[in-house]
Length: 445
Image 1 (cartoon, rainbow, N blue to C red):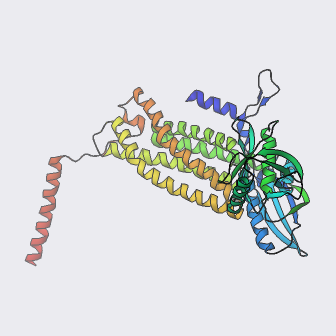
Image 2: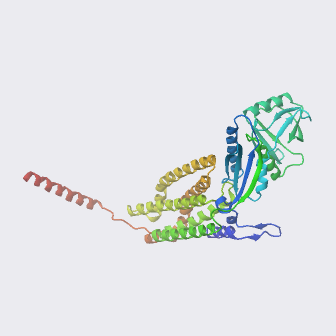
Image 3: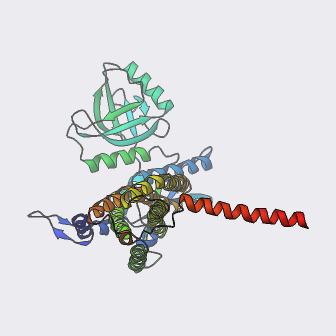
């Protein structure tokens, strides 16, 4: 465990070149994606160039679709809103901590139209894979393991695509992207499940497939958009907030570790090792999971989950103390029984918190608020805290038991007063005498 923690801490903060390559390793703690309040980001305003019926409803649907698309791409703290000025409708998108904002916002604002034609003629369109028919576009792989674009049609698109493939079975269909010829395919059989794959004879890179799929998915928006303006947004909380948050977190964790050792002795040492494991693994998860964009609310979720991790250890240790105090069990048996009887309380408390985090995650994603950052870090932290409390802490204590399994003070344990059978009979006799005297006095009176 000491070797593991040392390596994890080292790889979290140290940068170094990789062998004889042109690549450098960056500490994973430095790669955590930050939210708008901690790192700033980009703001883009799109002008709605569409008119027609149900415009307000279609704009609202576009805002929801854009929000879902950005979250799917890993920008969980992105915010999409709408406004109306001088009878013009605008959609504003704010995306934090993005390396190439212009590319992403252009992909969203300049969608691609996908057409299936029966001939190389603009009058021979048999299916337009846009907002009327397409439900989703995504990156996948074909039978040869090459990157490809997967299409998922909606109910109307599935029906139409089945009709087209049935009509042109054994024939060639021509695919056009933005009115330019892209490729041709031979329809081998009827496709009735509403799914299709677009491949490229020269093959796609992942980035090419990603960009193409994003443009196609943008084509499913309910209105047409054009980029109106773009601007950079600075971090609202200042550049020193992360440093001071780390300092405050380190101080808090240090105080917790000292308290655990003072209160529970060797059991507290095991809990501190598990807590150190918890912290470094949680930081690693925040760095590698695409849903995490750390904000001030996200930091609050991490701190709350750390508190839940410590709380689980306290529940376990108090139960161990009770088992040892109120019985004649050995230290090893008391520890085993304490863990077993604490599982229910720990799981119940953590499951309710997980349910709350999931609800906040869903509601936050639907309402485009920063609740998502809090919910994501809390969800990850609670799952990890249960693992460290029930598995890692127990493993550490098992490693300590062979060193000394008879010194109760070493584990912060103490026997209580055990009532023998003779003591119980004497106590009952005294109580009966007192009750008899009280009854006699009442008769005399």
